[in-house]
Image (cartoon, rainbow, N blue to C red; front, side):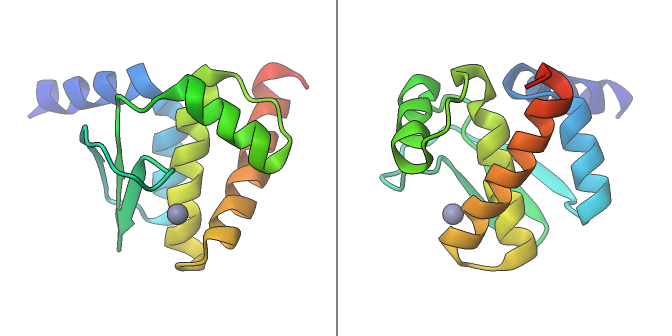
Length: 120
Ligand SMILES: [Zn+2]
């Protein structure tokens, strides 16, 4: 049980900071993170359902960084893209189905994270 928990944490941590995921999941009542590789046509490689967030660990980070720059005019390091996607899905959990609300939440939380962790 313990090793499987740590394996999962390690897997998450390869995609985005596990510390961030734990903190936000505990804070906002997310009970399950699922990493699943899939190819969907929607531009956000993640989904949410009640208290579960699913992320595609093989998301195309370079492409998504470009899309985010195009959509929102923010420069995002491709390595940070999974953080954005996580916050986008968390935004749905908190604010419902609106893509605009999910994106607004993701931007706010990402910029806050960046300020604290990257100093800009
Ligand atoms: Zn969405």
